[in-house]
Length: 313
Image 1 (cartoon, rainbow, N blue to C red):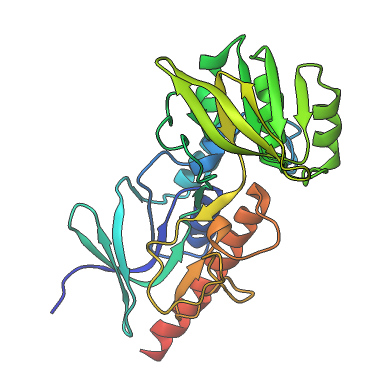
Image 2 (cartoon, rainbow, N blue to C red):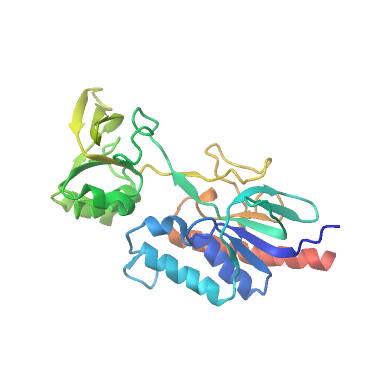
């Protein structure tokens, strides 16, 4: 007989969605446990300024992450600072295997593993990562003070990071494959009004070049004329979206063509008792506020699921 304690709920991932799920789980009096390998807050810690969190006009991502983590801790949410190797679904319970070899059991599991930066998949991208190629302006912008950088992308993240880099660097080129941005209009107006930012429309980066000291240029191709040219730069920042961190998603779980988990309105996956939230889940908008909303919904649904399991047992 397995003597491992059977938890009501295990939350894997401590970003905004996972922390919110923890708050609501404890408010529902669940025996909940959060497992997070890295720093609480996840990708939120890589965001310089957050201006769309309701009730707070402006706050750093790191400060908001700290506040969320403290809020969850105030409810007595226990946290394990370790990685997860595998999630094995079961009929009686679900098993979470940790990287340290320990096994945990739970009635319900919330997957809040988020996503990772999408790569361009071009020559030089992997070879020069950390030598001029970056996916985080807040992390690496300091190293490019008074230098020239290229930002690739046209969404909110690309423009937010470009505006941040414009305060540090000498020149920012935004390279976008289309003739219009996808970002919000406020960000578009700010970027277009910033004198240190130059926008290169209808263009893709086809290769990244480097010398002994790191990145020294990019090869550009115009998507309309197919004309190619070289552009000198000291760094390349890539913000073209995220891919889901879905390695822990059990086999047989329904996903879309891009690997995002398909759920119902309760954030429950095709496997009963396993929920997916935040950037891991297929949805129209991926924002801090929607990740938190997912966490609330999934925790409430998990509480109902656990109650039914216990009553039927």
